[in-house]
Image (tube, rainbow, N blue to C red):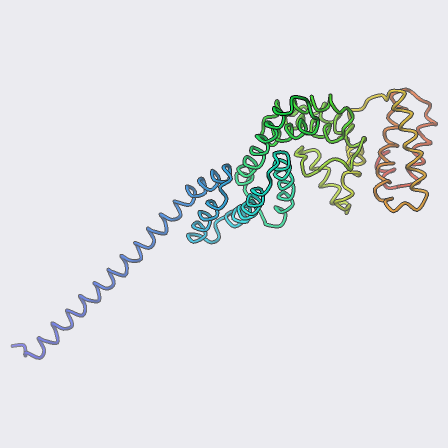
Length: 349
């Protein structure tokens, strides 16, 4: 017969075991519940980001910031979220400033100007997804386009500046046919504009019309390289030239003047034409003026030098196309060698 004290101890032990198993089951259930909630949270992230990018397109940056902060609570290291949050914060601040700009043209100019600042800002925030950039571009250029179209319709005449901006907006939004149409009219209104020619060349590059693109880029970078906004150029061949120039240690402010030099050396600016007599005369005058400046105490020799080199290239191309005596070509080559022997050797190879 079991004693009463032993039976009590036995029953107490059994109760404790049951309680222990019950607590363990509760703990396991809680863990599973947390994991399920976490999994559900992860599954929600793509949906949340879809809404973020829709908000970007509509310019609802404050709403997008709230959604991005929700994602960070689920996974602080989710790829691209931190950079997207920085982008949203950037544009949220700019949009608040835009409210205080009343003039249509100034509002449109503000948006395009901020996009240029934004592209520089991107170099400091790490990798940003293509979809993020595309969505913000749709907002900035889409809003600017509406404003420029209103200005264009209200004006009743062709203004080259407005036509240029319309072309740039259409290009950014991927409507290259419309971009070429407006830029073509702008070119008719302002023949010889390096900026308009560069934008046209960029559009032709983006639709893979490389022969036209190369010819137009060559013209643009000869006419006025410093006027060309490299931040607005999307062409892969120009971006590659920029990369090569930077690898050579050139400073950013010098890039536009060196691009035609290396564009010629690397065979990018390979579509050439014969100069008209008036153009040939102006070219020789420009060469004379540049040589004089470089021989003196000019403060911007680092800018004038690549411009002169490119002028030499154009002069040589003209002599070759017109069948001039080789002695004239050799004379120009010796001048090139004198001001930059490295470029000379790269050019003649």
